[in-house]
Structures are given as C-alpha cells and as structure tokens.
View 1 (spheres, rainbow, N blue to C red):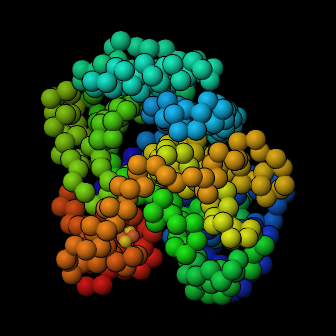
View 2: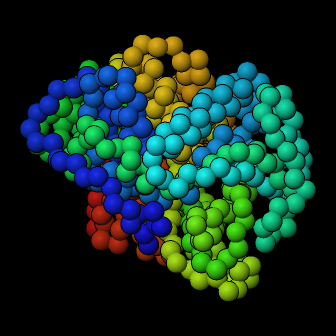
Length: 431
Ligand code: FES
C-alpha cells in the first residue's frame, strides 16, 4: 500500500544525539516543516528540524500533489463567513504560494507541469454559480464549463486555468538538500519551549509545530477545532489522459489527474473512523469507466480539516509564547504548506505579512462543524469498546479495508498489533 511517489530516494539525515540549542526548532519533517526550514535557511535564521521517523514518511508521500489556489468551492464559503476582503486575502496568500512553487520548481527536476484545475459538482449547479460569482468579486479569473472529460455525469465545473501538478517527493529531494534536519529524533514532551527527545533536550527560542495534527492538547484546542478525513487513490495504467486536475466539490466524491501514463483516481473518502468506500468503490468505478486499465498502485491519504476550510497558521495557543503552528490544510497541503512556511518565516524575522491575520488559529470557532466535532467526540467517548484511543480515550473503529483501528474523534490510527500509525496519538494502543 505504498504510493506512487514513495519509491523516490530522499536525502537521509542523522539522528540528533545529546542536547542542542537553536533559535528556531521545527518539529515535523513533512512538506510543511521542510518548507519552513527552507524559508528560514534562506532568511539566515539559525534553526533545526527534527522528525521522528524519516522525512516525508507520513502524509506528504500520499498527496495527489496538485498545486492550486482553487481549494474546492472555498471562496463562496469564506465570503459568507468572513466577507470579500478575507476571501481576497485567502486568494492572494495562496497565489503567492503558487508563484513560489513555480519559481522553485524551475531549478528542481520534479515533473512540474502547468494544468487547468476544475472543481465539478454532480448535481448542484447553483453552488458552482455561486463560486463563479465569488471569484468574480475578488478578481480571480475562472470559467464555467458545462461539461468535463470525465466518466461521470456532472452539473458543470468551475475551471481556473494555469494551475500545476508535480512529483512531490522529487521536489522534496531537491529542496531538502543541505537543510539542518535530524531524522529519527522523537520529541516526547515540550517543557515550555524546550523539547525532550530520547537522547537529550533541545533548547529553542522559538518552536514551530508542523506535526500534521498539532501534538500538544493543553493549548489551542485543536482536538475540537479539527478532525481528519481519509481518502483513497488508485494509479491506473491504460486509462485515459484527462488533461487537467479535477475534484468533486462534495466530500466523498472523486478526483482525477494524470502522472505520466498513469491516471490517479482518488476519493471515496470520509471522516477517519467512519464508513467509507475505500479502494473497492474506486475499483468499481475504474472497472466500468476504464475496463482495459490496470491498477499499478493503491494508497490512502489522511488530511486535517479545520472548522471553516482555512488552515491554522500562527501562534499555537493564545497564551503560548514564541510557539507556532501550521496545520489543517483541508486536503490542499501543497499551497497550504507553502503559505504556512511564508507566513511563519515573516513572523519569525519580524516582517509584516498582510495575510497572516486571516489564518490566525484563534479566530472565531462558531461554525456548524464545531457542533459536529463535539457531538462525534461525545458519542465516541460514550461508546462501549475495549479498544480505546490513547489520545483522549474515544472508542476505536475497525477499518476492514486497511486492517487498522481508527479513531473517529481526531483520526489517530493503529495497526492490528497496536502500533500508532497516524497522530495525534503519540502512544501505542493498549491491547
Ligand atoms: Fe483523539 Fe482518538 S484521536 S481520542
């Protein structure tokens, strides 16, 4: 169950031994942490990045790697919740991230290709029209398409031309060379801004948590502000070239993009630990739409979802000092991670970033998703089961497609023999 990208060799880094001092400690070696390290390196800041396993051994290797500022039908949603100015800032922040990828990918062999991006709806044309109207208000060039070259019937699509796709781990292999990274260095505990690892302590002036799901519970309330969503991908040979990147606006819908002569068919997802179609649903679609295609890879991706569709970038908790976070990219981890890295770099070097305020992790939390997250947590805490999650004690659910124990509360996952597979849990399941 390894992704198409994961065979790419990445640079290896030593484990940290003993104590260390640094100006900025970055915890987490996925794309968000690595881009933050890259930005600080270029800004001349003394930093170190520590990763508990190998870099990009988690979510980053499972992305479908679309680089776009079209995050589903996000703009109508932001416009409704916060107004046009915030929607415009969201667009500008992610356009700047998109441009930064374009600049960096000029010098990195990572199969970067310009492609149009489409968000389609199976039945809700009105939503698409509302998104077109929102994009028009904030000055983003988009087109309404009556039809898309996909094997499903749609009510149309919103197209933003000139977006991009790439090979994420070839990009990481290029950008991470020479960065101050330590692998196999597990931060077990934070005491203020001092990290305790298995071999010593790291004394840091400032800390960035880039751990996918923020790992400290007592600040920031991320356990109520986020949940995780799991989705599935097949890489098919002998299917057609869809010449673009496509995603359903609906939660459990499908996504399509090509890589070389493979078609990446994704989707069939749901909140982690709840019912989902998994690969069988995708295989059924593949058999009917592309009967001659052969499956070459299959894998799953796990994403952190915020309450309002925007990432949490900035101060970790209201009272934490010099402690920052970048999380909750809502399935749009490429431009989300780059936006996070650019904003956190600016905060650290004391430069004004005009987009930082809209991503504040301490913005208002009164959204319908908050009630849903709360209700799910109460239900799972009260569910009788001898398989409990070591994170906050919810009942685990058996995932038969992946043979794992999954937590519907915040998305931790455990192997059959209890080993933690996905955070925020940082301990194994008790047997
Ligand atoms: Fe939080 Fe399971 S992930 S209780």
